[in-house]
Length: 136
Image 1 (tube, rainbow, N blue to C red):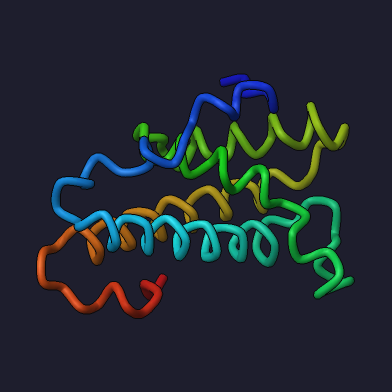
Image 2: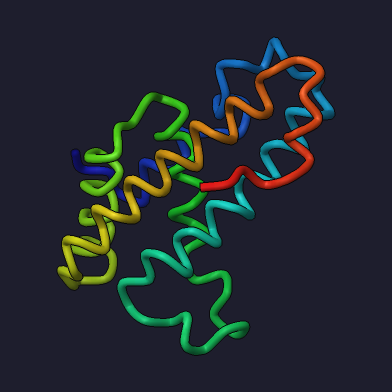
């Protein structure tokens, strides 16, 4: 799957979760903010193909644009393998590197697990568990 930076504009925040009907607009907005912050942490600390986490906090926003795109792709049903493929495409296209495959595979699975847990917690009406990040 090839996803280029110019394609990222197609994923606006209103398309992030099909469960929107289960959340109030305020809860949905809160989820979007929290999901972005959590996903950027996963990319920064668990994927980090260019090793910028050694320079924290100066480089903390390094992968933010990829997190925004990835949220839209996850909402579209991306599998762990497809997530890994997207991360590889980012590495090859934007970073011009081909980092460790095992790291990508692990990151893809972690991201998928996180997204499913987050959607489950936030998508259950009356569930206050969404106030805490999901355990992976």
